[in-house]
Length: 281
Image 1 (cartoon, one colour):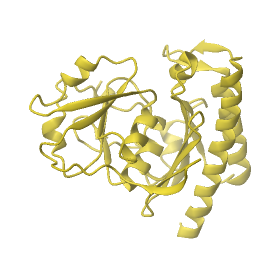
Image 2: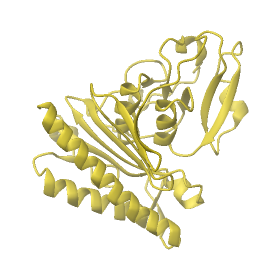
Image 3: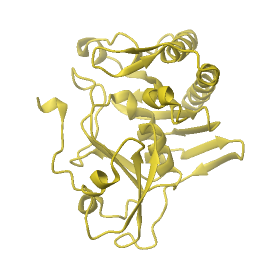
């Protein structure tokens, strides 16, 4: 696909993410929504469905030839998906639990996957009025009330000895996180909500690493992976194998780690002895 076509799709994704995010923020501010529990016991709300409807309608109208894979849609089988050269990968609200808990740490995620790789990533954080976005090979950016500017991961003064900032869940034990890190390093922690916001904070240099243990879907990492990679970082499974997209019947991710400064010997820093890969079961 030509660069100008990618640029048009990026602008479209940015516009739609903001539209969906503003609608979600209005619901959030009013506090008037219904919450449900899905079959996998994860939460979902009427705001998730609202955002999903907005995104699907806009994308189907603007790009009818590009399939959509959303967390809140019925998922096509691998037999159908494997023939897609490209598709939109959507998480209407990443951080639904945070939305319900009213922490403000939730975001709208839109990614374009081509040949099993994220090539466009857009993440809108409505309460923070911040839009993170990237196009493969073009760098990563953040748009906020402070302006629009490129972002990059933080370069540590000494990759082998500098203090490492770990983004952790607001509901995660600091001690449990630190127990998975090399004890020879010095760490600080930054509590934050959704997976994608932690990844964005690493992309803009506010944190250095984030470990995710537990069930997530490919829609939780698609947009983040494009943004973090273009900002100079990386996302990988917690055993440091690459994450993959649209290559298995299951859409679940393995445990994964988001890493900033690539000069850091992350395989020595992050110690995942209980790595879980759902595709091995």
